[in-house]
Length: 175
Image 1: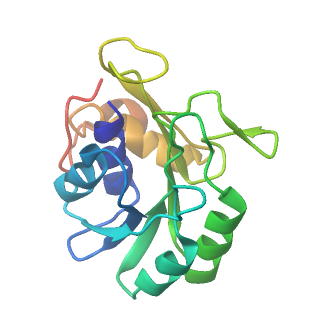
Image 2: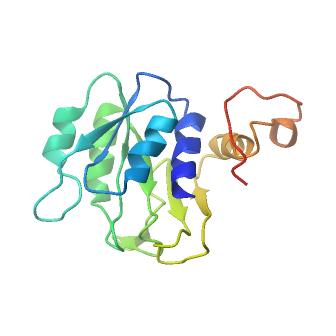
C-alpha cells in the first residue's frame, strides 16, 4: 500500500526517532500514520489557498535541524509544484518522497510524477485512480536504495539482494 511504501522508504533512507518529515495537513491520515509507524515525526504544513497543496512559505518556516524530508502530495491528479519542492529540498538538504497515490499518470512540466524525488510512492487502494483492492509500488533511480527497499519488503532478509542470510532492520512482509 502507499502507507507501507512510505514507511519502507523512510526506513530505507535511514531516518530514525527524532527525525522530522514535512507534509501538507490536508491529506489522508495514512501519510502521518506511516511516518509515525516508521518512528519519525510528521510536521504539518499549511496549504496554499490558491493551489490547496503545500504552502511553501510555511514549509520553510517549519524546517529545523531535525527535518530530513518533505513529502509533496500530488492530489487528485494534480501535481505539486516540484520546482519549488526541489528548490527547498536542495536548500535544506532534504530528501523528497513523492506521494503519487492519487495521481498515477499525472505530469509536471511534461514529466510524470514520481520521477522528481528520491522515491515515488503509488497505491492501488479502493479510492485510487487504478484500483486493485490494495497494493502499491515504489520507484527510485537510486540502485542502492532500491536494494534496501526490496530487502525491507521481505522481512529485512538480505539473502537475495546482498548474498548474506541476515536481518538488520525492522521490516515487514510488504510483498
